[in-house]
Amino acid sequence: MKREWDRNAIVYIFLIPALIHFLIFQIIPFAYSFVLTFLDWKIIGDSEFVGLKNWIQFFNDDLAWKAIWNTVLFSIYYILPTMALGLILALIINLKVKFTGFFKGIFFLPVVTSFVVIAGIWGWLFGGTKSGLINYLIGLIGIDTQLFLSDSSQALIVLAGLSIFKVAGSTMIYYFAGLQSIPRELYEAARIDGASPVKIFWRITFPLLKPIHFYVLIVTTIGSFQIFDSAYLLTGGGPNHSTTTIVYYLYQQGFAGLNLSYAAVLSYALFFIILIISLIQRKYLGKEDNIY
Image 1 (spheres, rainbow, N blue to C red):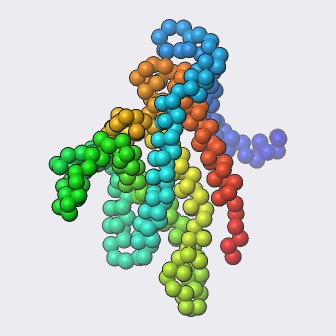
Image 2 (cartoon, rainbow, N blue to C red; image 1 turned 60 degrees about the vertical axis):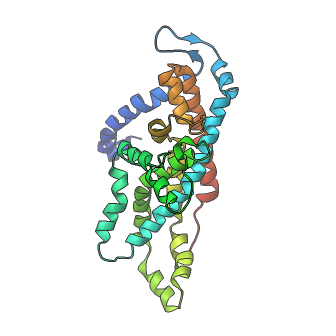
Image 3 (cartoon, rainbow, N blue to C red; image 1 turned 45 degrees about the horizontal axis):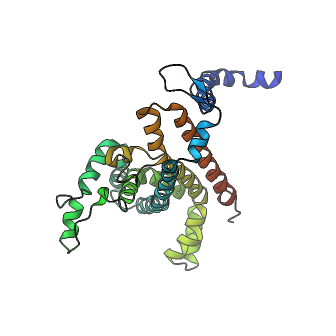
């Protein structure tokens, strides 16, 4: 250990501030929030030990399970389209045509634009009246006015579309980096052998992007289960709780209702759900393949 310290002392010294920050703002709050799950604490007044009462409330809370189901549905609507759109955009800018830099900026612009601004535009586009742009356009071809955000069967899909539009640009960057790392010699050899562009994509490009697929899948899955801002800004969890996600419900309990102990239970439920899904994804999709 002394030899190891002498060799890397400067590294450990520079790591100390980051480790202190991680301990104070990550580990300690994470541990204390677990303690909160066994207490009744509403900020004002003393806390009271209640044992498993909060956990029992969670398992009997129909709205909590509906919020979890809404979050799962949102993930289904969001994950694969985000990955597909990001890959398509990356393939477009990888063609090395004119104005590639311009297209990169256009595709990435939603990522750096304020979510509040984009949500406002989205709310106008999908307004549930004839004044909404989408309703106006579909009205030109004879389709009846849709309620969109005011319809419990459509609202969650509209929110998923908003998140896809917002995040696809960053997913594009991940895939573009992966495309740049694929050896050009493989493409040249495939063309000499007479492979079509479609076959080159499915036999070379898509398989060699597997590490990027896995990383993007993990990131988008975690992001989908943490969705909050779109529901908060556009629907308030409605209509009929159809867009109440687990994080939005956590917010309602913890900050609107000052029931921080129950909110801590919800946060741990979310943590375990994401952990289990991530472990399953790693087990079945994170294996290294010998593509060559």
